[in-house]
Length: 261
Length: 300
Ligand SMILES: Nc1ncnc2c1ncn2[C@@H]1O[C@H](COP(=O)(O)OP(=O)(O)O)[C@@H](O)[C@H]1O
Ligand SMILES: [Mg+2]
Image (cartoon, rainbow over all chains, first blue to last red; front, side, top):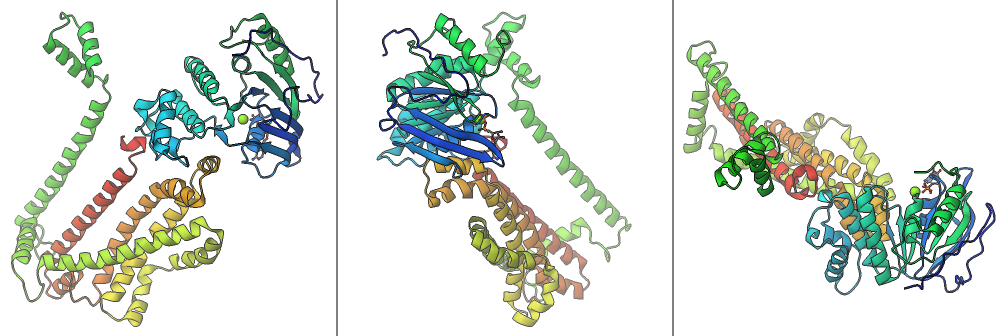
């Protein structure tokens, strides 16, 4: 694991494009985005956005509701044909959506196995399910799963494809607080084992602080702010560095200090 | 179950550990709604009994009205005489009517061929128009136009075209089965959750896999609703189509009975139609229950 270092934060002001961090050489990056723009009508949701995600890097993307987080993620997933700019992703991409999006008429194992092109799809799917602790529910119908179980199945389905880039669009926001903490631990342990690059979209600053190597703030259609976090995991929520960073991020998001929970 | 009985015996004043008290507690707990499955099952069983009872009461009153002469046999036969007629039609091969089972078989065969053809063609057309815009542009307007032609109005034309044999009757059943299943399957295919389509793309499904794993299963609930409607409308088409120049089948039996003013044979044929309809409808429901087991409301 990373050595215990003090967290380093950079002090960028708004509207200044953040140059890619030193380690993120675009050629070596797992995902590289240049000049990405997306308009809906006459509104530019993404506006000349640049982003690099290094191999194995865990990046959290926060931003106000409607700031374009999902739009960026869909562009990275190749689901949006109408973006302009360059998006290049090295290797397979997997997505876990906010709603688990399990196919209702396929049992859990078949959901995980769907579209898998390895030699032994059922075996791989079974292994993935055991990794998320869902072996007993393998033959259950998705409608009978709890929210947390469904989201774990969705994670297993994303991970079984051994993605180089794992895109997570607010996958925990519909879960209760307790389940969410369990899921955070699960995601970190899965990430440590498989080491995909991760882009976690969230509106929860604390979630970003607990999980990410780097927290990005999306504002005005660009990456308005970027802060690396080098604290080892699991992290104390009240670590002084995180408290300071939390304040800074909340200010970035336009939440006045003292107005938070 | 186990935890419920433990809970109940712990709550009760009886000393815990006694098997009888635990079981009794569980039963009380079940009845008072702690176990949700049981009251639901009971609630379903009771109206079933009442329904059968109310039907029996009506038949009883009918028989009473016939026996007292309130309902003349020339207008409506009594239940007893209908049962007797049915029995006679089964055991004797009368020159006028043939046998009941023979007629039923002839009618069922006519229905089954027409229905199978109509449903297959309907589903194939729906897949064609549902999956491709070109198919929709080519075929859908024709089907919509045909659909708005009243089917019953086609009978004279069918007789002109196809004569009075089996063919026009089967075609008539086929057409009436085709449209409900076509329209509903088409709507089902177009109504498949676009988020699942997106998921399929993320999972790298090929077109064939997408159709097999996402589109067709997603359209199934709607297609099965269409199938149910097809059963109803094709049965209606059978009843109407069969009474035209039939030489066999329940419809033939009815036209013969009409000539001999034998309303009890007509009643037998109608009741057999009704039972056939009920059975077919039940079969589709059973199919639905099996095929849609993944739905929570069908119980998994
Ligand atoms: N298909 C669409 N058509 C029109 N507007 C859209 C569409 N998708 C997203 N938008 C708009 O783009 C903005 C960003 O959306 P989104 O990326 O979903 O935001 P979020 O950051 O909450 O994930 C929102 O204002 C949303 O209304
Ligand atoms: Mg979003």
